[in-house]
Every structure is written in structure tokens, then in C-alpha cells.
Amino acid sequence: MIVKLLWAFVGSLLVTTVTGVFLVPFLRKKKAGQSIREDGPVWHMGKSGTPTMGGIMFIAGIVFALVTGGIEEAVAGDWRHFIIFGFSIIFALIGFLDDYEKLKKKQNLGLTALQKFALQLAAAVVLILLLRLEGHLTTRVFIPFTSASFELPDWLYFIFAAFVIVGTVNAVNITDGIDGLAAGVSLPVAICFAATAAAWGYSSVGLFGAALAGGLAGFLIFNFYPAKIFMGDTGSLFLGGAICATAFALNMPLLLVPLGIVYIVETLSDIIQVTYFKLSHGKRVFKMAPLHHHLEMSGWGERRIFTVFTAISACFAILTFFGVWQRPGV
Image (cartoon, rainbow, N blue to C red; front, side, top):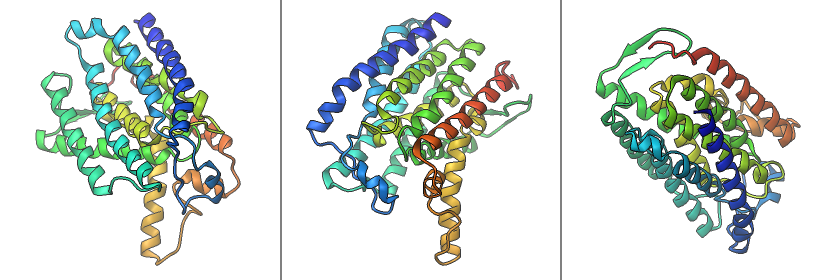
């Protein structure tokens, strides 16, 4: 299995990198540049026009890795890697529609919040149904780091799953606010998924995790500060979908709590800011939300934020792996 995981990582990395070599100039030529939010940090305005929809790069890398390395599992009846990918692609298409609307309107406004929520909720229901029908998902919720678990009725599990999926996808999207941040934070998460799946003997899920890690590593070559391309909602929604779908494919969605600590903190900072602003009639807790923008306005550079947040994500990924590699609760 180790050889397969290495192939998935390296193959995805190489294809992502090669795709980027051609995609970046192509998108520049087509003037597919990102419009920057006017209410964001003023120094971000210099990024206006940077090509977006770069998520296509690591999606291409993952496709290559799955097609060349994942057929054996599919023939044996384990389609989890393709189910995860298919689910993630649905979210990528939602993101693509959003990116396209932004490019067409030449402003940082795409699909409405209600449109995105409805599409994401529908995709979440499809994922849970597929995993349940294939026998890869139960309604028992396992608690990481312990042997404890509890059973939920089907209807309640669906509500829980939909909340986790939509919340995770949007949390990853919120984290994608400065150069390299979402990719950097998600790289240790993907590696942890690959390692955990390998330890549990879930070859297909491990293959997807390794392919995702390789794609993100390749993407960072172009997305690290100063970014030559942004992943756009095409990439960030695919990434969020991939992360939550992998957790559900492992039948342990609560892995997302320790693994997604950066996403959670980023989202909480946004919620706290908006809530306090409304309750206090205009006062703020942070200089700007989410947290990475607050740190920027406090004098932190993008490289420093990337390094600190990625290091925190890596530490929690290591903690998570050693806390669950023996598959607690099972």
C-alpha cells in the first residue's frame, strides 16, 4: 500500500505542476483575473487581476492519480475514492459557477448565499446516501481519542452530517483568504487522512488522501506568496468537499474537530465578529475578520501567517493520527 500512496502523491504533484505551467499563462491571456473585495485589506488591491480557478490544477493531478492507481480497488468493489472525488467535483462545479459569475460581473460577488447553501445541502445528502448504500457509513458516531461512540437515528444523523459537511466546506472557503493559506493548512490534513486510512487498511481512501496531498503540494508552487494564481471557489469548495467526504468515508466525521482546528478558529472569528457587531451596534472584536485578516492588520506578513497556521495544522494532524491510528471506538 505504501508504494501506491507514494505513487498517488508524486503522480498528483507532477501533473498538478505541469498543469500549472500551462494554466497560469492561459488564464492570464483570457483575463480570468480575481476581483478583490473592496472591504478587504487595502494592500490586497494589488492582487487584482491575478488568475483564479487554479483549483483546476490539483483536480487534474488527483484525477491522474486515481485513474492510474485506483482501478484495482474499484474492480474489487471499493469505490470510496471515486465517491469522494465525485462529491468534491460537485462542490467544485458550485465553486466554478460562483467564480464564473464573479468574472462575468467583474466584481467579488457570485452566487447568492441561498443558492450556494441549497446546492451544497443537496450534494451533502447525495454523499451520505451513497456511502450508506455502499455500506461504508453507519449512523454510529465515534469520538476520536476515546473508545466511546453513540448511535443516532437515521433522520438525526442526516441532519448532523449535512451540518458538518456544509459547515466544513464553508470553513475551508473562509480560510482561503491569503496566498497559500488554505492549501498550506490543508496539506497536513490530507497527509493525516492518507496515513490514517493506510493504518486502518482503507486503501482507496488512503489513495485519495495521498493524491490530494500531492495536488496541494504542487499547487503551492504557484500559490505561495506572492501567488501567481488563486484556487478560487472552484478549488476551495472542492477542497472543503474532499476533506469532509474523506472523514465520512472513514466513518469518523468527528476527526474534523482536531484536524480542522484552523478552519474552526477562522470560522469562529468570523461568527464572533458579525454577532458582536450586530449586538453592539457597530463595535468590533477583531480589526477585521476572519482571523488571518486581523493578524494582517496587526502587522503580520502573509508568509508569517502561512507558516504559523500551517505549523498549527501540522501539529494537530500529528496529534490526530497518533490518537486514532489504532481506530478507537471500533
